[in-house]
Amino acid sequence: AQKITQTQPGMFVQEKEAVTLDCTYDTSDPSYGLFWYKQPSSGEMIFLIYQGSYDQQNATEGRYSLNFQKARKSANLVISASQLGDSAMYFCAMPRESGGSNYKLTFGKGTLLTVNP
Amino acid sequence: NAGVTQTPKFQVLKTGQSMTLQCAQDMNHEYMSWYRQDPGMGLRLIHYSVGAGITDQGEVPNGYNVSRSTTEDFPLRLLSAAPSQTSVYFCASSYDGFNQPQHFGDGTRLSIL
Image 1: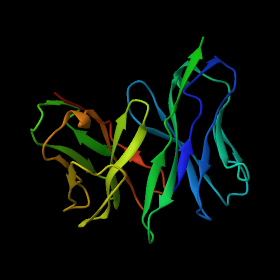
Image 2: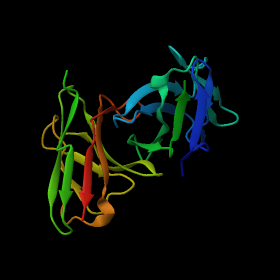
Image 3: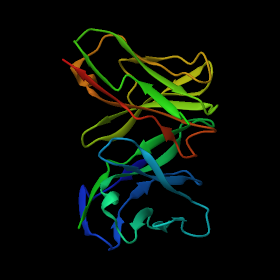
């Protein structure tokens, strides 16, 4: 069974510093992808970044990048130059196959990031 | 740009009452899904649909029904509400499956007394 693990319930970072949020996964699928979503205190879910297992390079989107280590089954989110608006809950998620071509989506339990001024 | 619209935003029910959470998207997405979010549990998939007329169960389907009569709408029904169904419910959609970024609605906060 697929599993997503986020081991950091909460993280603190100083404004303008970089922070890494951990995500490890377990899957038997030969091809897979990993997503990161942000949930601010207002409650909406915002897509941040995606990494495919066969992508040659780590994904980057502005200040967000993925430290993808396939052998270690980890896809850590790196936020550079943290801003106060980065304070939010962050979720790692993985689609998983459930028979045939239908996929489902499994989320980790999330990491609450607080950016201090 | 409406995206994914959920109604209502808040609701309080009594145990045993029924209700329907509405979800509509205007992006012509084939895939739609419902999640519940509980403290410390992340999001868990309740039901999903790969197109009009096709639905399937997710991780936590018990106590919930869905139907997909049109591409745009994917309502979630609670037939007999229980306190354990107190949660925040999210509807999401994507064009071609879970291997693409999901577009989420703003959520419905549901309390069952």
